[in-house]
Length: 393
Image (tube, rainbow, N blue to C red):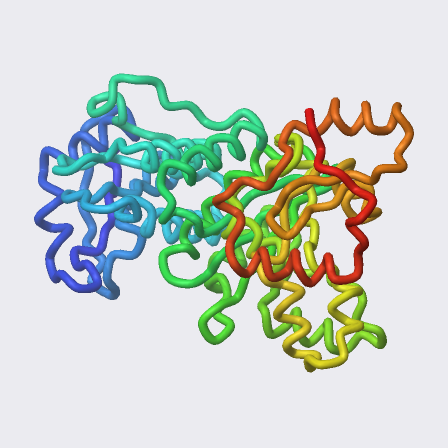
């Protein structure tokens, strides 16, 4: 029995591209890897261009979606943008016997940068089978075992590539959060993160669709895929929507904004307590410097301006639950230069506890922006620092 290989010859901007890439040798290799035999016939679908850099192999009742690498790999997104489209088409297919694969066509360029390897691990976690990666890369590439491994790898990748700060993953005690940027190429990465995390999640997932640029959202096909996964709740948020919710409050002293947390990620990076270095995401929180209740009581600015101060990424730090509470209670204070101070009248045991759990006596210089210092000054206007002293450890 011969396999049927179907593909669209044209790319969106390059007529006949896939006729040139899919030589008889490449098609034979794909057929052998997918079906274990060499007989196939080719069907060319000329009704549309090739979405997902995709061909479909049907054999003995199974449909195999095979997404192809690029022939010239020039940037970090080149191997990413088409695959979520293939994933969405795969999930939209109602047939029971199906699988999704990835195949490296002969290519030039580096297909195995740290970012590419991160993406390949995401694809494997999402259930994508790599047909021939061993021919081009001699080290092991494995799917993520759990969300903690993924968060660490994501954090390390973002540190090494500061331009790669688009979507973020975090955890609380009962949820996993994905802060998904949806503008430009970021929407592809956000889709892939959601599908991969859904396969290894040990708790429900909240996906915050961070809308930008005229409130763009994830593509409808991606939303349909995410809804089929069953363990992800979609939330749509933007500065506009968060502002509207804030302005509808009677006293405007509360702010639960995904946009604020996203802005903190953008400015500070991965969750890490600024005072003790704790990186356990479940207990790291976004702590306002100039508090929302203080902002709401300021008479000389309008409500819209108050909201923008409340969600500004410079108006906050990552703090563990313990240090957040100490900071909100003004037991630990920060002077206008970012130095840690404590009250003079604390009992000896309390001072000893603070010293034993606080490993940084000042805020890192890279976080001391002029805006951050302005918010510190605003906070400290109402505090008496006279009977405090700098923390020494």
